[in-house]
Length: 238
Image (tube, rainbow, N blue to C red; front, side, top):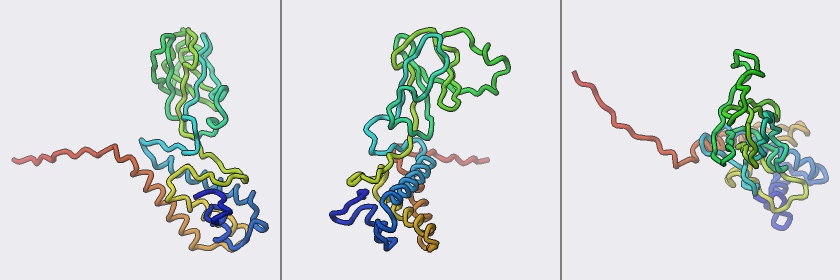
């Protein structure tokens, strides 16, 4: 479903008009866009909660959800978003961090927390070498031990990011999740309008909840490549 289809009246904005019975003079395009994006956040949250081993990414993005930065000799702290493109800064779930040594060999880093260290934090793995662990706080990643080499684009952070939001000027752009659930966005925006006008419709609320359950069910089952193993059952005879 396109965001704003003024030619055929089949877009999200037009569906909001149909559901609310008011035009964009009363329920402005800017307000509709904000509420649609709030619903978009909700959908992304439901999907990421449900998608298991098959990570979702908004289909509107043209880049891969990985941020890279250079490894600097003797530097232990790295700003996660220092060199990341703008569309990579809107992320929700950190999935893994990989690092390369000075020869380009890759390793997966394992997370640790400062509370797990029984000695002074400064003394923990204080001899610089190939990092094996990371601690993550805010937007800063601390590598342990700190690297004793330089490597261009040697640190790679993989994550699940949030949706590619709509702007009020968008027209043909579509939501970046399964099309069978695009109707959720005008439903959600209509619900927000009903709260503002104090005309809340319980049927509308139930429709939204039913679609949320359907979204979760769909994304929890979509990884058909992970087949469950059927094991032979043995009976014990005495």
